[in-house]
Length: 242
Image (cartoon, rainbow, N blue to C red; front, side, top):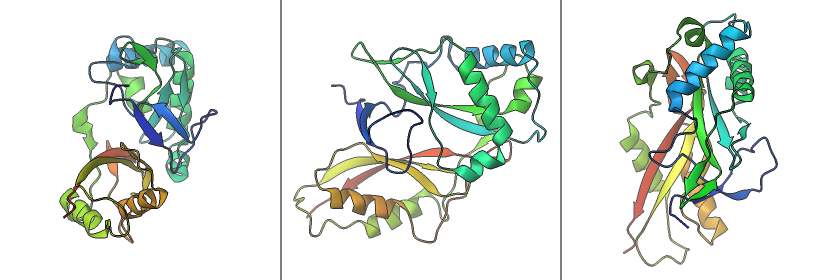
């Protein structure tokens, strides 16, 4: 199977449908593929039309924003992925409900493909109702997004991870590389850790997860138009074993 097809261990979250703890699913859409016919621009155009045509009311708090993770299934149906950041959901409940309503009423979702086979895949959508009500040709702008930050920068985070990581006691005699993926929620906490490599030793995986979450230090969460949102990190790690 193509390398893009990743075995993901869902460590801290559960998808809001019946899924096993370990499943074959793409963490992102393959390069060049879109989750919706016409891409993000068409998705937001259709969302805007739905809002206007169905008399959807704006949020009382215009600053609410929510980044929603969804699973697009091989049959083109979508499922919202449950968010462990309950505070973020509570603080943006209107934007959250707004996004779920739009997801349920649009139909042109396109499943991802790997080697010609339709494959479950995750994608993420920013719902900022204020903009959808205001603009007919709306798409979130990267200039409105400020990435999450770790005190001292990502190089400091990597340094703390490496200082925690220890292969002593594990049977690894050669250098190896893997990629850690995780999210930083609206509170600056790490969630939804997954690793792109399968390790047979459960204790080794636990050690990796322990090192991913720095003790007593939080990220400064990402923001969209000044409001905190969940964001993703991808951290390549190379371990040289002498």
